[in-house]
Image (cartoon, rainbow, N blue to C red; front, side, top):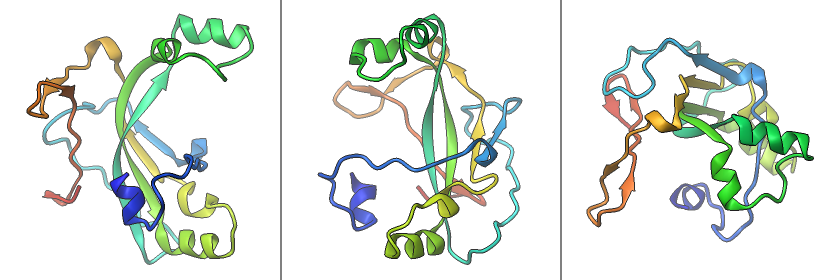
Length: 159
């Protein structure tokens, strides 16, 4: 919700989804997915923008027998939260890149954000870690379990 407020949006709005086509994904399955100092990944600066923003994100990979059973029975719409968690095969980290100037122009024209969010290599991602291999820690001080994501650019923490 902090990010929604930062972007000038009302946090009470229903979720808004945007397109990240397959060409936007750049997955390095050979890289260690959760490490304190991964090797840097060099990406070309995208065309048609002078205002590139980024956000570190967790992603969920769906798969396994529960997903196959749901696909055979008509899909995953309207499933229970309990079944939804059974569909999660693994997790990973990614960087969501946005051409913010194109996004602003699209929003002003009341048009889709495809060109600002779904361009080639706009979602570099680390390898999928199977759920059973994910280690969580008590990081909130109240005993709640969680994971921590930090985004660094040129060695400087930015998120």
